[in-house]
Image 1 (cartoon, rainbow, N blue to C red):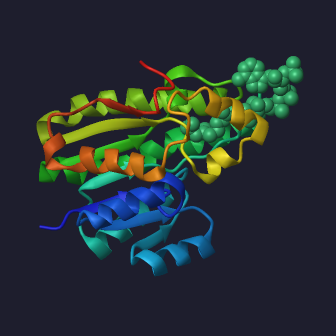
Image 2 (image 1 turned 180 degrees about the vertical axis):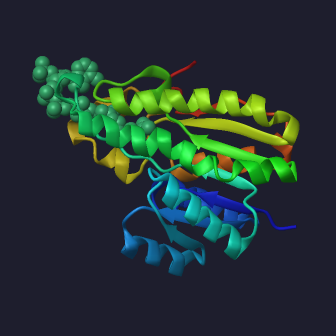
Image 3 (image 1 turned 60 degrees about the horizontal axis):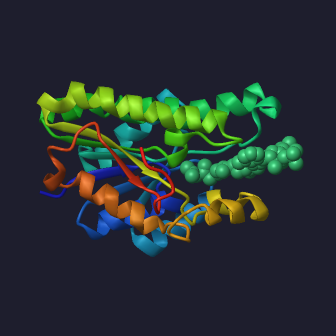
Length: 240
Ligand code: CAA
């Protein structure tokens, strides 16, 4: 039976690579996006993967969107809570708006994405919840008090969900990518980015598909006993 996977933020960056890889592995994939209609249309044309537009920061939009995906494709077996934003600033310059935008999208967005899907997973006795955390949730980062708080929060979410879902055949795990070659990382000022790359023992940024392969593994039947874990994929930049 073909499994259905939902990838939030699934038409760009790491999410795009995840959507493509899951499709290549035989999943029926739905990818969400927040705003860039043009890029989403291009993505669907190139890949055949359906896209759905909603704001993961809204519970109502998420629940309605998920109901639509399930009506179109069937019950969601694998959910990848990947959508995320940055609003970097040193703490003394960070505004309440920058704080709330990041918390709402990156952290509340995970609740909004997983919560409507969870009861169905419990009933069907199978589910894979994969949350995109970050190296910066593990180590913190100058300029990212807001983002690091959400990414550390993701680890608390999966460790708790893992305990609640284990007997219902649901696993919940996190991936902590290091610095990956995406628009988000390319938006860091060049001189700052050069210093970051110099601190990565691998001597390079990661590739989006290197993260997508971790997702595919966690989604697979082979990973059934891996629950509440974190996969770090960061080129040896940081060890927990
Ligand atoms: N450690 C110590 N000092 C640092 C520093 C660091 N890592 N980074 C910057 N500084 C210092 C600078 O040297 C400078 O010092 P001086 O004032 O003495 O010259 C000062 O901080 C810069 O202060 P500014 O007030 O000028 O800062 P700014 O308003 O220009 O903003 C910043 C700085 C936004 C934090 C910028 O440095 C930046 O973008 N840093 C990168 C943050 C980062 O890594 N973001 C990750 C984005 S990708 C992502 O999030 C994906 C993922 O999961 C990995």
